[in-house]
Amino acid sequence: MYILISDLSFQEPIFDAHIHVVDTDALDMLVRISEHFGVKESLLICHSLGAKNYAEKKYPGRFIFAKYFSGAMRFVDGVESILREIASLRDEGYHMAKMQSAPIMRGRAGATQDELRMDGNDMARMFDAMKDEGIPFLLHLSDPDTYYATRYTDTSIYTTKERDLQELEGVLKKHDSMKFQLAHFGAQPEIHRLDNLARWFDTYPNFIIDTSSARWVSRELSKDPGKAREFILKYQNRIVFGTDCVTWRPERDYYEGRYLALRLLLETTVKHRPLPFTDSDTVNSGGTFINGLNLPEDALQKIYWQNAKDFYAEFI
Image (cartoon, rainbow, N blue to C red; front, side, top):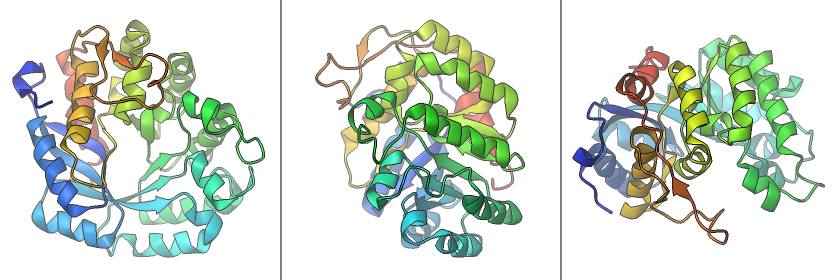
């Protein structure tokens, strides 16, 4: 899959605002591949302090660091455990926090549907602690429509996506003095959800969204590239590039496929180009195809670089 960077139109530096480190050998491979695709700096979500320290020592100046919190943590260990982690976050050299709080986390913990809602009073203690420390928050709270149709069908555990999006909006509304990065296009890259996401942008000035995950975002925005392009151009100051690459193991095709997919989507005119890796959500229904949005250079410069530099300015 190795591709010449000259085959893509954008030649300036890129900031990847959503990658994870678990395995450090895999991180080394990801750094090499991301550099080939133009990435010069990244927000690195660290699943251990050891991995964070490795990355900081080996790649000085390349990363800003987010401490990873499992969304199941609050159900299993309680809010107090999160407060202790927040209290040590700055001393450990982290700049912000990230929580993976997709519905699957509620299912794993056996939590009830309304237990410790992110927009509830109990979880407000977590947000207040972050506000006190000046810690921005990267939040993943909802998932693709396809998951709700296939994975989240047990109504004794899961609710609807509309309910989960109401919870996410409640977080923005209740904690309007915090800086948020909402993962995965605000959980709303589906074409029929862009109007709701636009309403959020027009109502709440305290958040940005990232373009991760490469699979989900490429699939959904490609379904109506005209509307997707119009939306992105209107809100180009509130979107940052991110792949959601997770360094579980050194897998070249995995990393290359994510970078290639998003860059084809954002900056080219490709039509019905197969996603360069398998999309498990569509593998039995014809596959996923990319229709390029052909964004102009000035919009790409904001999404690929300047918006992240502005949002993370205090850390860079």
